[in-house]
Length: 93
Image 1: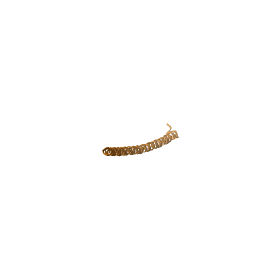
Image 2: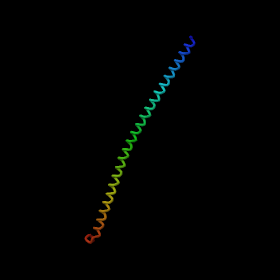
Image 3: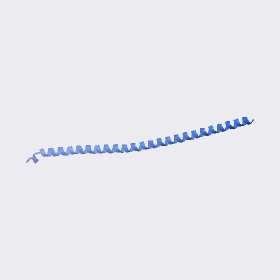
Image 4: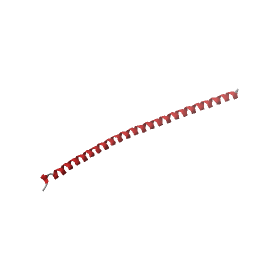
């Protein structure tokens, strides 16, 4: 009987050890998954911030381009006006 009891105790210890190892592996897996999810969330957040900054920068570029285009059109109109004015008979010396 002593051998059977020892065998039974050993089997119980092995089973307990295996269960503990399995719980530890599951805990580690869950921690790893949480860490990866947090990292992905941070990456998404950074990407959203970067996209927002890029959108603002693109809007500024478009605004500046429009302003410059308007300035070019205005300068052309002013230059054309002055050239026509210079050709008028009043300005001839």
